[in-house]
Amino acid sequence: MELLQGKVFDDLFRTFNRRAFHLEVQDSYHTPEEADPFNLFLTEQSDDLAWHQPWLNLVREVSSAGKSIMRARVVTVPHGDYTRWGLTVAPHNIAAGEDIRWLPRHLIESTELTSNDYWLFDDDRVVFTLFEPSGRFVGGAATTDPAFVEHCRKVRDRVWQAAIPHHQYIASKYVSA
Image 1 (cartoon, rainbow, N blue to C red):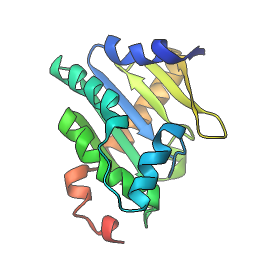
Image 2 (image 1 turned 90 degrees about the vertical axis):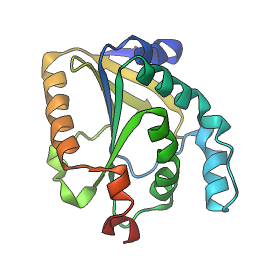
Image 3 (image 1 turned 90 degrees about the horizontal axis):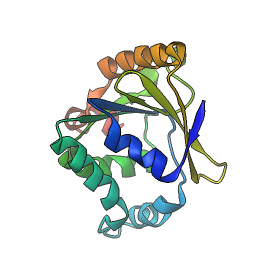
Image 4 (image 1 turned 135 degrees about the vertical axis):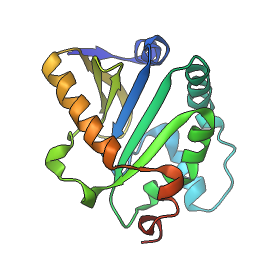
């Protein structure tokens, strides 16, 4: 595996050809760049989303080029604060062009998931996302090893099939649970 950091990691989102899929399996992330916006949510203050604009701009750029970015979030029900916050941020991602689905953890066997988050680019490159214990994003461990790629494609296909599109999920019994 190859460690990709900084601009090299960011360039993955400009150089894929068709589809990027992100699987998120953690119930919360404690990245320093999200700390202030998350605290605004917890204290019911407004957020101008300035911290999120670089990602939203990238999603718009990629989407306007005819490429797709898909995200599946496996979450525990009832939701914790971080998931509730994610539900409020997701519409901005969707408006930028990202397709987001939610999968209540109890609806899938843990053996059908990976234990780590990953990005799957064009069905031929997997990049596992890496975080320090403090929550700081370190980068991604990339591989094109056919065994890893095939496993992650199968996980993606199972999760995506079972996951609920955002607009349906927010109206579901899982959000009010």
